[in-house]
Image 1 (tube, helix red, strand yellow):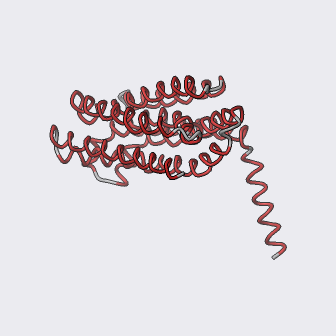
Image 2 (tube, rainbow, N blue to C red):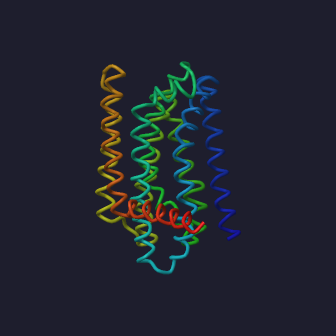
Image 3 (cartoon, one colour):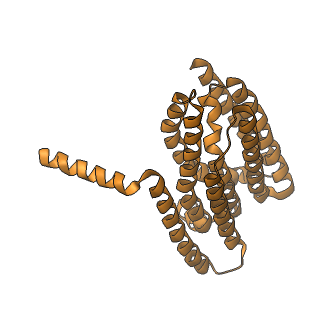
Amino acid sequence: MVGLGVVFMFTNLMLAVCTYLTNLFVAHVGSVQQVGLYQSASSMTNQYLGLIFSAMAVDYFPRLAGMAHDRMRFNQTVNQQAEITLLIALPLLVGMIVFTPLVVHILFSKQYFEAVPLIRYICLGMILKASAFAIGYMAGGLNDKKFIWWFEGIVAIAQLLLCNIAGYWFGGLEGLGISFVLAYAIYFIEMIWIVRRRYGFSFSKQFYRLFAIAFGITVVTFALTVVPMPVWMLYCVGGVSLIGVIRFSYKELNDRIAIKEMIRSKFSKKADNEIQG
């Protein structure tokens, strides 16, 4: 446990170093104002989606570690977690892509509107990050400290840093967003290949179907923001799409974890407690 904790601390440290070096590069090539825009965009997206990842990891990682010796259950749990993570993240990402200008206007000021394309690109990349979330914890569940140290702590971070440097050098703030998508696309593909070779794991056909739908919806939503149209029209079209995405996610989640039954059971327990009280 101590060794695994040290390795996780190392990966977090390297991620912090990557963020610092990216900020340093942006400040040197661009300006401090550009650093502020980049930091606000990153914090806005990572703050809300990070809550989902952190909350799910609290339950997911201990369950995964407890099934390390039962590979069939282990693989089933990873697939289920990957599907649930996608379904929870999808409506939030679609909503953020569509309503980013409104959110920036509420939380920040007009000066931050320059970061809107960057935020949308980060949201597009987040669907890949959400897809890789479940397999990212496999090494920890199997106590594979060597892999976490070298790949998660060094290789993946170095790739992210190089993508960030190249993205900003060639495309400015928007290039940083493109680099985020590219970095996590590479990471997701690498993880699929590595866990298959190292742990004998592969995603189910059901997950790939769900991923294709979720990624397609996210790409189409992003494409809508590029098409020239009045803001009110984008909000109307995007709002209708968001309602459809919420219904889709709810239906798929209900099929997997029986949300209706969970809600009914909680309300019935609450009513029983009130009666007994």
